[in-house]
Image (tube, rainbow, N blue to C red):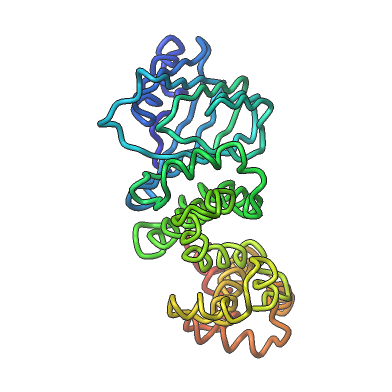
Length: 321
């Protein structure tokens, strides 16, 4: 985990200043306050060009950006965040939003705002530069008070909550880049879904992000038996043909995408229960494989070994440690 700050390693009298300086570097051109008894752990991951994931455990803090902080040379970006613990008060775009724990918060960081988080808190956040978001500042500003009305609200919220753990397990490479692209597309679609239909960039965003939205939904419902084109079409308000076309544009197959995800889930479960030799059939069924022989064949084709051989490998690896 790329930790920017852990106040446990500092003397108590150094902690508040360390929290303020770290947040001021991560969120430039803002005034930051932290309590005298500050306790904080801040981690930040690069999610690809113009996008970052931030996870922050703290004993409360306040970030305020006024008009005097806004300068022409500042990087223009947005933030989407969920606070899972603590008490939250947000004043942004002439809207006062209180008691926001557990809810998505969209901030246009080219505007003044005042964010106050009180008590022991945990914050999951994404920041994305406008240059990579592909939406106008006006579209984002219109969406700020409307974000809870988006049909994508729950999808994006769950994605954001799971994102730090997912990013922390991935090494630099194609998978991390694809996750970054998908995350940006999801946020783009979230905003576009509540922006005015007359905004051309918003309409284009909904069309272009369909693949990212569907694959994120599949990932979140991987064990469901009915991950079909019909279900996806109904979920996202498009035709079955549009579902297949979105996968084809990305050189993918819906069926193969679902199977790969289920294989990876089953592989993880078999590794964690490697010493229980009776789990293969149960794990296969739990991940939507009705035929154990079909599961074993697909597993071998994908990983180069049978499910039993994979379990034996995991047992041997744990014994060697």
